[in-house]
Amino acid sequence: MAVTVTGELYVWGAGSGGQLGRPKVAEHPFGAVTTAVVGDVAPVALLGELAAGAAGGRNHTLAVSVSGHLFSWGRAAAGQLGHGIGTSVGGTRRIADADLTEPKALQPPVGMSASKMLPRMACVRAGEHFSAALARDTWEVFTWGCDANGRLGRTSSERDAAEPRPLPRSLFAGQAVVALACGWRHVLAATEAGLCYSWGAGDCGQLGRGSERDGSTPALIEVIAS
Image: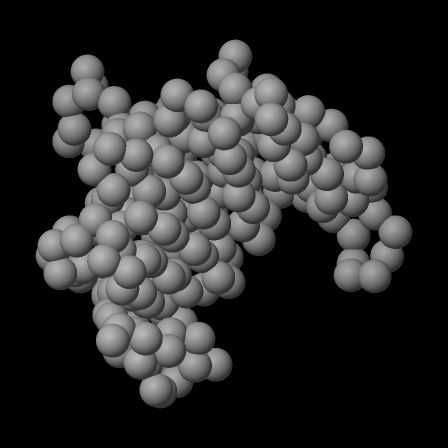
Protein backbone atom coordinates (compact mmCIF):
# COMPACT_ATOMS: atom_id res chain seq x y z
CA MET A 1 0.00 0.00 0.00
CA ALA A 2 1.04 3.60 -0.50
CA VAL A 3 -0.22 7.01 0.62
CA THR A 4 0.44 9.96 -1.66
CA VAL A 5 1.30 13.49 -0.55
CA THR A 6 -2.21 14.50 -1.62
CA GLY A 7 -3.85 11.97 0.72
CA GLU A 8 -4.77 9.19 -1.72
CA LEU A 9 -4.45 5.57 -0.57
CA TYR A 10 -3.47 2.84 -3.04
CA VAL A 11 -3.37 -0.91 -2.41
CA TRP A 12 -2.35 -4.04 -4.31
CA GLY A 13 -1.39 -7.68 -3.63
CA ALA A 14 -3.26 -10.57 -2.00
CA GLY A 15 -6.93 -9.87 -1.39
CA SER A 16 -8.56 -13.12 -0.20
CA GLY A 17 -9.55 -11.53 3.11
CA GLY A 18 -10.93 -8.36 1.55
CA GLN A 19 -7.85 -6.37 2.62
CA LEU A 20 -7.61 -4.64 -0.77
CA GLY A 21 -10.89 -2.87 -0.21
CA ARG A 22 -12.55 -4.61 -3.12
CA PRO A 23 -14.73 -7.75 -3.44
CA LYS A 24 -13.03 -10.95 -2.28
CA VAL A 25 -12.14 -13.73 -4.68
CA ALA A 26 -11.78 -17.47 -4.15
CA GLU A 27 -8.64 -18.66 -2.41
CA HIS A 28 -6.43 -21.26 -4.04
CA PRO A 29 -3.73 -23.64 -2.71
CA PHE A 30 -0.35 -22.07 -1.98
CA GLY A 31 1.74 -21.74 -5.10
CA ALA A 32 -1.18 -21.86 -7.53
CA VAL A 33 -2.06 -18.96 -9.79
CA THR A 34 -4.82 -17.05 -8.05
CA THR A 35 -6.89 -14.00 -8.79
CA ALA A 36 -6.62 -13.16 -5.07
CA VAL A 37 -3.33 -11.53 -6.00
CA VAL A 38 -4.08 -8.26 -7.74
CA GLY A 39 -1.14 -6.70 -9.55
CA ASP A 40 -2.87 -3.51 -10.57
CA VAL A 41 -2.67 -0.61 -8.16
CA ALA A 42 -6.12 0.68 -7.19
CA PRO A 43 -7.28 3.52 -4.95
CA VAL A 44 -9.30 3.02 -1.77
CA ALA A 45 -11.62 5.81 -0.61
CA LEU A 46 -11.90 6.55 3.11
CA LEU A 47 -15.48 7.78 3.10
CA GLY A 48 -14.49 11.18 1.77
CA GLU A 49 -11.46 11.69 4.04
CA LEU A 50 -7.80 12.05 3.03
CA ALA A 51 -5.35 9.38 4.16
CA ALA A 52 -2.38 10.24 6.35
CA GLY A 53 -1.06 6.72 6.89
CA ALA A 54 -1.85 3.03 6.52
CA ALA A 55 -0.73 -0.37 7.79
CA GLY A 56 -1.21 -3.95 6.65
CA GLY A 57 -1.56 -6.98 8.90
CA ARG A 58 -1.60 -10.57 7.69
CA ASN A 59 -4.91 -10.10 5.90
CA HIS A 60 -6.42 -6.88 7.23
CA THR A 61 -5.74 -3.23 6.51
CA LEU A 62 -5.84 -0.11 8.66
CA ALA A 63 -5.73 3.54 7.73
CA VAL A 64 -5.67 6.84 9.60
CA SER A 65 -7.06 9.97 8.00
CA VAL A 66 -5.61 13.47 8.08
CA SER A 67 -8.27 14.34 10.67
CA GLY A 68 -7.12 11.43 12.87
CA HIS A 69 -10.00 9.02 12.27
CA LEU A 70 -9.34 5.28 12.04
CA PHE A 71 -10.61 2.96 9.30
CA SER A 72 -10.26 -0.80 8.88
CA TRP A 73 -11.21 -3.57 6.47
CA GLY A 74 -10.31 -7.16 5.56
CA ARG A 75 -10.25 -10.36 7.64
CA ALA A 76 -11.83 -9.90 11.05
CA ALA A 77 -12.15 -13.21 12.91
CA ALA A 78 -9.82 -12.20 15.77
CA GLY A 79 -11.31 -8.75 16.29
CA GLN A 80 -8.42 -7.00 14.54
CA LEU A 81 -10.77 -4.60 12.72
CA GLY A 82 -11.91 -3.12 16.03
CA HIS A 83 -15.63 -2.85 15.30
CA GLY A 84 -16.81 -4.50 18.48
CA ILE A 85 -20.06 -6.33 19.13
CA GLY A 86 -23.46 -5.82 17.54
CA THR A 87 -26.83 -7.52 17.22
CA SER A 88 -28.40 -9.38 14.35
CA VAL A 89 -31.42 -11.55 13.68
CA GLY A 90 -31.24 -14.46 16.11
CA GLY A 91 -29.34 -12.65 18.84
CA THR A 92 -26.00 -11.07 19.53
CA ARG A 93 -23.08 -11.71 17.24
CA ARG A 94 -19.61 -10.32 16.92
CA ILE A 95 -19.26 -7.81 14.13
CA ALA A 96 -15.60 -8.77 14.34
CA ASP A 97 -16.45 -12.14 12.79
CA ALA A 98 -17.64 -10.52 9.56
CA ASP A 99 -14.94 -9.70 7.00
CA LEU A 100 -15.18 -6.29 5.36
CA THR A 101 -14.31 -5.48 1.77
CA GLU A 102 -14.72 -1.74 2.18
CA PRO A 103 -13.24 0.68 4.76
CA LYS A 104 -15.34 1.23 7.85
CA ALA A 105 -14.70 3.93 10.46
CA LEU A 106 -14.06 2.76 14.01
CA GLN A 107 -16.64 3.86 16.55
CA PRO A 108 -16.31 4.56 20.31
CA PRO A 109 -15.78 1.42 22.44
CA VAL A 110 -18.71 -0.08 24.33
CA GLY A 111 -19.31 1.87 27.53
CA MET A 112 -18.00 5.12 26.09
CA SER A 113 -20.51 7.90 25.48
CA ALA A 114 -21.88 7.70 21.95
CA SER A 115 -21.27 11.42 21.62
CA LYS A 116 -17.57 11.01 22.38
CA MET A 117 -15.42 9.86 19.50
CA LEU A 118 -12.21 7.91 19.81
CA PRO A 119 -9.17 10.15 20.25
CA ARG A 120 -7.60 11.49 17.09
CA MET A 121 -4.81 9.14 16.05
CA ALA A 122 -1.32 10.03 14.90
CA CYS A 123 -0.47 6.65 13.39
CA VAL A 124 -1.74 3.13 12.98
CA ARG A 125 0.19 -0.18 13.03
CA ALA A 126 -0.68 -3.83 12.36
CA GLY A 127 0.69 -7.31 12.93
CA GLU A 128 -0.67 -10.83 12.60
CA HIS A 129 -4.36 -10.61 13.55
CA PHE A 130 -3.92 -7.57 15.81
CA SER A 131 -3.79 -3.80 15.53
CA ALA A 132 -2.38 -0.79 17.38
CA ALA A 133 -2.64 2.98 17.15
CA LEU A 134 -1.10 6.00 18.82
CA ALA A 135 -3.33 8.87 19.97
CA ARG A 136 -2.35 12.25 18.56
CA ASP A 137 -3.06 14.43 21.61
CA THR A 138 -2.64 12.13 24.62
CA TRP A 139 0.08 9.88 23.13
CA GLU A 140 -1.62 6.79 24.50
CA VAL A 141 -1.20 3.39 22.88
CA PHE A 142 -4.43 1.64 21.81
CA THR A 143 -4.48 -2.08 20.94
CA TRP A 144 -7.09 -4.58 19.76
CA GLY A 145 -7.43 -7.99 18.07
CA CYS A 146 -5.79 -11.30 18.98
CA ASP A 147 -4.01 -11.32 22.35
CA ALA A 148 -2.02 -14.54 21.86
CA ASN A 149 1.56 -14.17 23.14
CA GLY A 150 0.47 -11.04 25.01
CA ARG A 151 0.72 -8.91 21.90
CA LEU A 152 -2.02 -6.50 23.07
CA GLY A 153 0.06 -5.56 26.12
CA ARG A 154 -2.93 -5.63 28.45
CA THR A 155 -2.55 -6.40 32.13
CA SER A 156 -5.32 -9.00 32.11
CA SER A 157 -5.98 -11.72 29.56
CA GLU A 158 -8.57 -10.48 27.07
CA ARG A 159 -8.32 -12.73 24.06
CA ASP A 160 -9.67 -11.45 20.78
CA ALA A 161 -10.48 -7.96 22.09
CA ALA A 162 -12.66 -6.51 19.34
CA GLU A 163 -12.43 -2.85 20.41
CA PRO A 164 -9.52 -0.41 20.79
CA ARG A 165 -8.55 0.12 24.42
CA PRO A 166 -5.73 2.31 25.76
CA LEU A 167 -2.81 0.91 27.71
CA PRO A 168 -2.33 2.63 31.09
CA ARG A 169 0.35 5.33 31.04
CA SER A 170 1.76 3.68 34.18
CA LEU A 171 3.04 0.79 32.04
CA PHE A 172 5.47 3.27 30.50
CA ALA A 173 6.56 4.85 33.79
CA GLY A 174 4.02 7.63 33.25
CA GLN A 175 5.65 8.81 30.03
CA ALA A 176 4.01 9.60 26.71
CA VAL A 177 4.68 7.18 23.85
CA VAL A 178 5.89 9.00 20.72
CA ALA A 179 6.68 6.11 18.35
CA LEU A 180 5.12 2.70 17.79
CA ALA A 181 5.97 -0.36 15.68
CA CYS A 182 4.36 -3.79 15.26
CA GLY A 183 6.18 -6.94 14.25
CA TRP A 184 4.48 -10.19 13.35
CA ARG A 185 3.46 -10.90 16.94
CA HIS A 186 5.23 -8.29 19.06
CA VAL A 187 5.23 -4.52 19.60
CA LEU A 188 7.86 -1.88 20.32
CA ALA A 189 7.14 1.57 21.74
CA ALA A 190 9.46 4.52 22.32
CA THR A 191 8.69 7.16 24.95
CA GLU A 192 9.34 10.88 25.06
CA ALA A 193 12.42 10.21 27.19
CA GLY A 194 13.90 7.97 24.52
CA LEU A 195 13.22 4.71 26.34
CA CYS A 196 12.10 1.61 24.42
CA TYR A 197 9.50 -0.87 25.66
CA SER A 198 8.53 -4.25 24.16
CA TRP A 199 5.81 -6.85 24.58
CA GLY A 200 4.30 -9.85 22.81
CA ALA A 201 6.00 -12.92 21.35
CA GLY A 202 9.60 -13.43 22.38
CA ASP A 203 10.40 -16.84 20.90
CA CYS A 204 13.21 -15.46 18.74
CA GLY A 205 14.49 -12.95 21.27
CA GLN A 206 12.69 -10.08 19.52
CA LEU A 207 11.69 -8.44 22.82
CA GLY A 208 15.31 -7.67 23.66
CA ARG A 209 14.95 -8.89 27.24
CA GLY A 210 17.73 -11.48 27.19
CA SER A 211 15.36 -14.44 26.94
CA GLU A 212 12.97 -16.13 24.54
CA ARG A 213 9.90 -15.76 26.75
CA ASP A 214 6.73 -13.95 25.74
CA GLY A 215 5.87 -10.74 27.55
CA SER A 216 2.21 -9.89 28.13
CA THR A 217 2.81 -6.29 29.27
CA PRO A 218 5.24 -3.57 28.18
CA ALA A 219 8.70 -3.87 29.75
CA LEU A 220 11.73 -1.65 29.41
CA ILE A 221 14.54 -2.88 27.17
CA GLU A 222 17.24 -2.40 29.77
CA VAL A 223 20.29 -2.77 27.53
CA ILE A 224 19.48 0.43 25.62
CA ALA A 225 17.98 2.35 28.55
CA SER A 226 21.18 4.03 29.75
